[in-house]
Length: 158
Image (cartoon, rainbow, N blue to C red; front, side, top):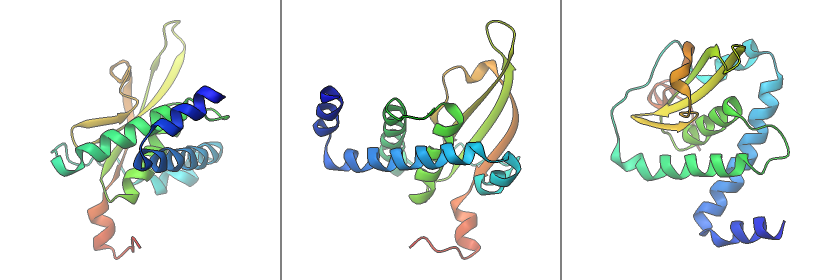
């Protein structure tokens, strides 16, 4: 426990805030995962749509820090924080920062031939979570979280 506290204290204040935010969003995403998928799907974005692959260099550092915070904090939650939980949490963290992202859901078979599912998140050309092993899965559903669409519909980001 002391090592974990020392690790947390070693980060700068910006990263500490991101880690706390990641912890909260990971918990929230875990709660969502327990709900029927049909109830949470509308909150994930436009179904079967993708965001652009073009890069916004202004977002690169933010994307990297959000990815790092999600991956690091997911190891310290007392609940399961695997691919779907991480992807939803990261998507919501990016949405808060008005950065578009696309959530991918895929199915395939694991090493023993059993059915397996995987989720990953992309923003521009960068994979934020779940990129490890994604090539083994066939995409079955996509959700585009387009911030520009939300602004045009008059949503408030205050």
